[in-house]
Amino acid sequence: MDILQSPSWAEYVPIGLPTMLSEGSLISASPGRITMTHSAITRTIWMNGIGPKPGPGELRQHGYSVGRFDGSDLIVETTNFSFDPDGIDDHIHMASTVRKKVTERWQIIDEDHLGLLITLEDPTFLTRPFTYAVLQTRKPGGPAAAWSACDPDVGRREIEFAYPGNKYSDTRVK
Image (cartoon, rainbow, N blue to C red; front, side, top):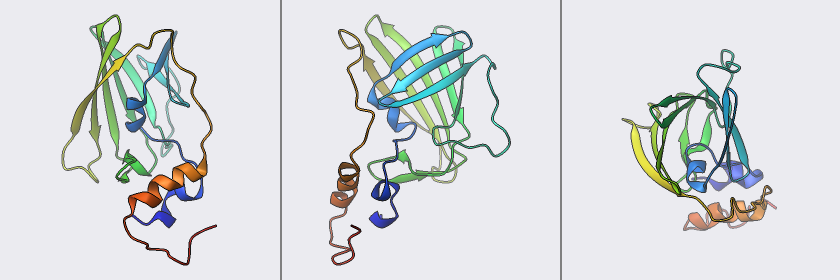
């Protein structure tokens, strides 16, 4: 990983989907849509084919999400992603392409727990779909306050310290 080419090196870039799904969620519903807030990122899930459709070639960092119910499970499919150098994982810096598709299956386990099955597809970087699970637990007293700003130095530090050598001894960007 070349840290000088990282988006985090120059400016704060929010984490992508599916990584942000493990950050906890605030979920609310309105007619025709569900809104999910993950840390400082809010996304709209358009239900049952209602809502604006992306135009040809219209891509977004967090994609375009549509949802439906399968019994009591909420199924969310997200497509139309832009290229993201950290789109599959922001710790090992695994990129994703416009071919990425994320499918979420939200399941009610009990009053205080949600199960989330995430299937990630990106035929450019993955040889087959990858599925994993996340357990979310309700926090007593509601969601905790979250910071919506980022300290660029903290964002850079993770990338700098991830590289074990001294690749840029004299050319560090100031």
